[in-house]
Length: 176
Image 1: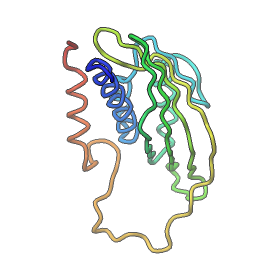
Image 2 (image 1 turned 135 degrees about the horizontal axis):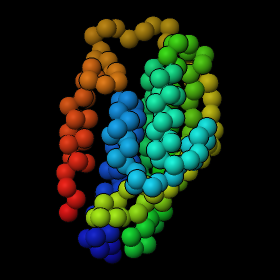
Image 3 (image 1 turned 180 degrees about the vertical axis):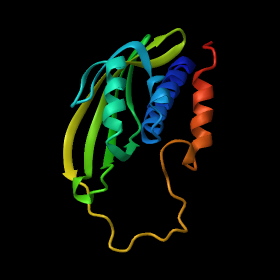
Image 4 (image 1 turned 135 degrees about the vertical axis):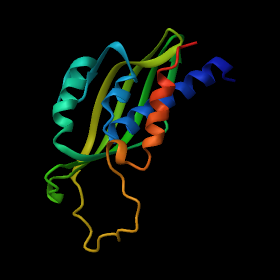
């Protein structure tokens, strides 16, 4: 039977993963950065290095994308004291700014993360992104959905922007 501390660790790790996906898809790299320890490393396929270098790369690469979409599986977590090995499957789609449907990409990824609990918070210490498959994303639909749909976007114009602000306020609370 898991202890209360183990259950809390699993919940916090899951929250960090969800916050990362939400922040990246909403274009809030500052919020996404809160998911990593300051000395973390990340091998993201097209980039490998420190987390600070990763977010410099994201600034440049993110400007080429109109949108991204991450759909995460529940994480598989192996806890070992203040450290955890975590694998999370991800369906990922990216749409370039040029809007070319043929250049959109759909991928099956796995995040293999080493989480560490430091100063009471679980955050990513090491990330390796594993690419299992990729395809050209399907073309745009022949009959586009009507304008009555609420549309997503990046930044403050997104309908879920209040959630992004709440997440930012939450992670900036003092630990403990």
